[in-house]
Amino acid sequence: MAPSAHYQILLAERPEGTPTRDTFHFDRVSTASPSSGEVLLKTLYLSVDPYMRGRMNEGKSYVPPFELHEPISGGGIGEVVESQSSSLKEGDIVIGNLNWEEYPVVSADAVRKIDPSLAPVSTHLGILGMPGLTAYFGINDICRPKEGETVVVSGAAGAVGSAAGQIAKIYGARVVGIAGTDEKVRYLKEELHFDEVIQYNTVEDMGAALQEACPDGVDAYFDNVGGPISEALYPLLNKYARIAQCGAISTYNSTGEDVGPRVQQYLVKASALMQGFIVGDFSSRFQEGSEKLAEWLQQGSITYRENVVEGFQQTPDAFIGLFKGENLGKQIVKI
Image 1 (cartoon, rainbow, N blue to C red):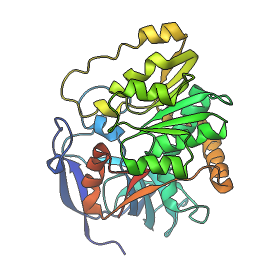
Image 2 (cartoon, helix red, strand yellow):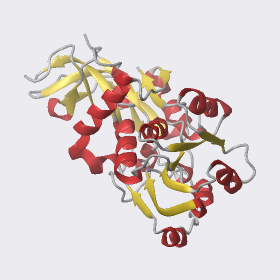
Image 3 (cartoon, helix red, strand yellow):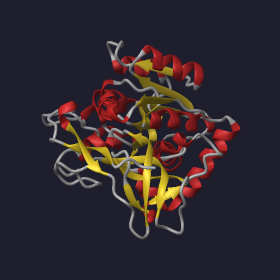
């Protein structure tokens, strides 16, 4: 039985720089009943992801910006508590793009039923969901690593980066990760078996550190961060290197104009490919990616970590924590 009222989280302001608690507003609203073709959900998990920061700004992007004083939305998992749809019944577990809300009403067509017996349901927000698929297509279709090649992954301890590095290892590549804490370095080397890991907060010369870790140059680069780290890597690109530009988290909270890097000369010298992408570019092949990721997970070829923050009220803090490097693996909120 759903309560008569519940909380949702609205975008209170467009942040300048890193979001704060003032960026968010908790609003208590009446719990609605579903109409024909709709379901009422009890939210179980919410995903917080770096791309959401861009949606807090005004301006054109690959997804529309969040509206001020309207609910924030993102990946979520919920349990059906009331249904007016023939395709979903009470007790079903579903995934979709959900408002940051404890009891949302959604169209049954806007969510997908998942089987909780196959794997923990939270994995559908991580290794079996958008982050895993992003890693799969970025490595498989853009980086295209061959046996013995060197692949570098920035943001390597996050949900996408950790999956990307493991997939590159499956293809026989030598994988070098870049991460920001000693704990993350240990995780990548000892648990995920990356060949080398650079702790960027402790090296004085990133270019020299990369050259030492990649003595034969770089054949593929899965980039989540952009900025000075990527600038230091470009001179090491080998002939016909491939760059999968997945994100640029180093710039998301920047308040000034981002200057450089000027990558063109390195692309020309190496006849290299640099392709920006989002996971939606491969939506027609999601089933292929999901099945392959599930197969690798069941085989033990890939593994995952989740950083679980407990409580709906902590959702803003979980999101802000992404930009402080607090998460090891996928950052999710358990409601």
